[in-house]
Length: 234
Image (cartoon, rainbow, N blue to C red):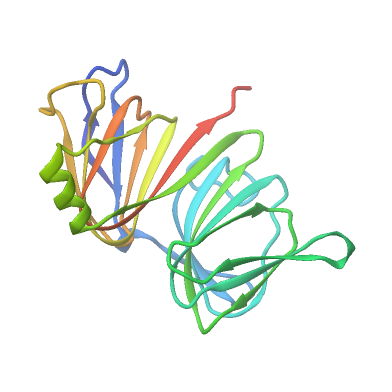
């Protein structure tokens, strides 16, 4: 991973630290049951085990159907990145089953880590994005930000593009598809002299620590997964 130009300066009392994580840097770890492969993108604490992380972000290649591992006290969010998708059957009381359908790119499923989940593949292997947050220690939000050339042309013809404001303890911007230029700057400053521009290809991630009032704009064509993480005061 690369510390991308160090800091974003501006009106914030503490400058934001920006780290660029390229897709090629991610290390594949096979599942114990042979059903897939996981690549960790980032976690806190860094390199924490599965029983010790506060939050963890990863990308998984799912090769076969089967039960999900259970993680007590963890809130999970899955996003379909590629493939025909999965149907996640969540066992509930009285033999009832709730099915989370991930059948289109960027479909989202949210469920508790302790839930009993059985995955069915729609038509062959899939790839998904996985956000895991330890309940009571942190809170996580995930949004899909899309950008097309048509949207960009409309923005340019009407008014300057307004950035989305990132406010969290940690923010992650994962390029889920396409190629995008992400510009980061101080949302409270009129000038963009200190703004940073980052070129993201599919699978690349920007990690921003302490993104206080940080503005984010997108150019190009593709989609970002925007994750905001806030630690819970003890």
